[in-house]
Image (cartoon, rainbow, N blue to C red; front, side):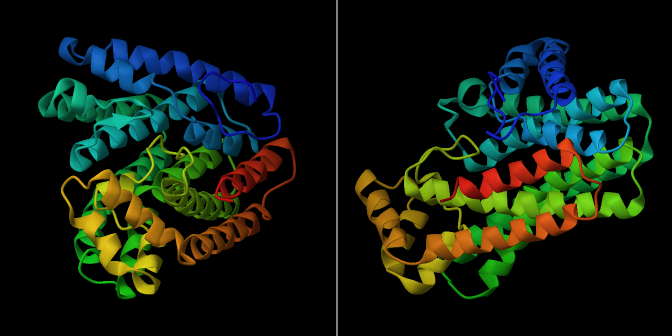
Length: 333
């Protein structure tokens, strides 16, 4: 699909879904423009800075499997991207990140106080959009995702702190808990919200939930690989960002067990590792089977995602969901 915002490369998206994604872009700008005056610039920049718009696309395609009202679908699709943007701002605050997608982060450009307020405004705006729809199923799905995001951020901190001193199996469990709550939670919420708006059965919505969670896990694993192999990450991060931030991802966990753990830990614990320390740590990870093992795990998640879709009726929307899943894993190869 041709789009300035770069939805994941996949077979042609149905025209109706594409039109909603385009309308979401306009509404995101409106959300920024109606922010309190000191937050207009940071909110607008964060909302319109690009991205895959994958979560709105998942919601739209899930809803189009059934029959959804256009107005509610547009508001819900906007809400999921506003919520996602809020989480990115708060992530950058916690990680003290300087750049995202090659541009200064909100916290780097405007300071912590404005960044916190901008993220909080976007969280609130998410539920303003949902309140206008008035469907308690959507509010529940988004609320559960928001709770998971907060818990997932804490799990990431704990996993990073533990991972720099310990490489036992518990860290894999901590990592999985973190990405289920933080990344996969929004994917799942998008699919559940879409299925609910489309009037699908509970069994079909559960199938979409299974698909969304598995896709989100694979998406994060793929991005963790990209952070090490020298390709642009799916999240707009640079190379080696996880090591610089002390974030212990699945390939790093595997490499700590199998390779030169001392070299990897030096990058993880350094407040600002030198390019030489960072390069040595990346090479130490790539010298193991860590990337291959992570790819294999991600492919297993995608297999689970496909099994979930098997319970849904066939059609172009389901085909695109399958293609999106295949594309996510394909990017890790």
